[in-house]
Length: 101
Image 1 (cartoon, rainbow, N blue to C red):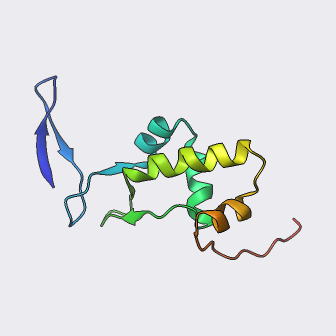
Image 2: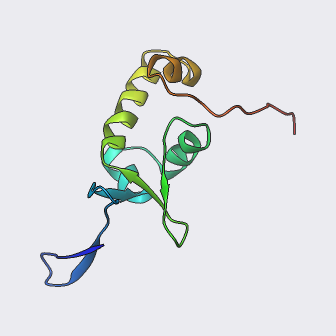
């Protein structure tokens, strides 16, 4: 990880993967994609989004995930279900069994 000087003259960690691609925490991703963290949690659980895990078990997402979420949200507005969206975007979803609680 690299240190980057912010405008407030403090240093913050710049997160990137082994290929040097910048990574976002879930809150940063939610803010940039204009969705809730809960939405991102759900999309990750069902396999629409992929996250990388840190040693401390934080989830990090690649920056291009912002555009993917925006595309998913637009397709939802057009009336597609999440299953249909996954098929259209060639994303293999996790299989969950529905249960009554």
